[in-house]
Length: 215
Ligand code: ADP
Ligand code: ADP
Ligand code: ZN
Image: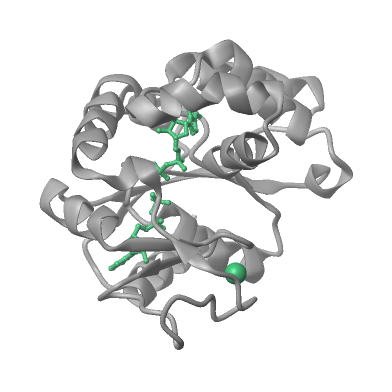
């Protein structure tokens, strides 16, 4: 199965991907994590992505598409994967459809996690991530057992530079302008599953599993 997790910054894509990836045994492909890893390694891709990420803008389609199409050529994606944060533009959605079609595959379902703006701001404001395994935590709603440490791997937790208020506003604006159009694209293909993301983490996870099984 090829599944896409769609939602605004802070909607809970990474959080739900953790759960879904173990429930469905699918590799988790997060474009933001791939860019941050490239940045850490100071590769050409990382240096290119840096200025866009700092401003809360999208990395150009051409580069992003190339990175993801390359990633899904890896053997772990041969029978499916879970996309988180990709596609984010119509051009990316079309390129993904084409890339999969070339392999005789296609997207099965697109899970759109809908969350109010007010809640998104609270989530991003309190988000901490594991530097080692990228698991998301939240100061209030999903705290780690030991402060500052990842429950899963003991890694150090940190706050993303682009989770500060000014950059968040730009990221939300970009989501509305560039990503919302792909909701209709997938609705038109009858692949869209809309989930109420304004609920607790477990409730959202349950709703996703229920809707995936129903269709
Ligand atoms: P969030 O999950 O909080 O929305 P991500 O980690 O997915 O954030 O993305 C962080 C940043 O990485 C984005 O603001 C953007 O600059 C870049 N990025 C990630 N995915 C894409 C994509 N599909 N297209 C273009 N840029 C992307
Ligand atoms: P995204 O990948 O969509 O940007 P994350 O999964 O990183 O979002 O979640 C953003 C923040 O909100 C994290 O701090 C996470 O712990 C928290 N969070 C995720 N889902 C929920 C939820 N349903 N209720 C409360 N907090 C949540
Ligand atoms: Zn960790």
